[in-house]
Image (tube, rainbow, N blue to C red; front, side, top):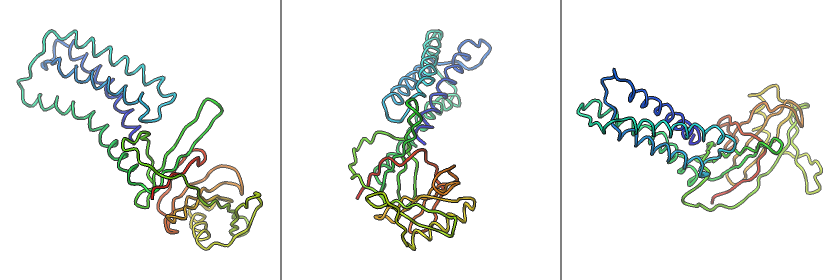
Length: 269
């Protein structure tokens, strides 16, 4: 949510840099362009660059196209500022309100999702980190916070309140649907061990009904909160991922979409 908002602001600031420049050089326009509004947006553009390059969100290779956009926007704002002959005052009250709205919009686009994700990080029970690795070039992280018994995808990387949690593990179960429902786990020697667990069976049955073509699955079970994440596969132990569902107290909550494998789990007491 926050990552998308920051990206939206980058493109919004670029579009507005073109808009202001057109207004400045359009002699037929009845709207006088005050230098102040262009300066404000240029400052927004600088702040936007600082935000996405500071590590507040994961940018990685996206920086390759974000930086040129911000640089072009900055140059266009400079041209616009230098081209305005004087700092025109706005006498029309309606026009003044329009400029106030233009100033508020980029602020709201960033601040609302930032406050929301900051709240989630500081009030969640679990924070899950998934990592998708594609060779040595691509490495993408996905973060899911469990709050109010629901999973929420977050993109905020830096918590200003520095909340401390403890690293924990979950119970892992493998499922096959070929002959009924077979639930298994692995012992310390990685030997397969068939188990009977009514809670896991209930989750497995419900997930199979939602995805009838699944032949296998694996489950992450969080015993402290009675949460479970089940990933359904096209084959018994491998294949294409068909669906991913989140359960609380053995009850389906919602479908989720993660990328890669579960790398770490932080638990907040």
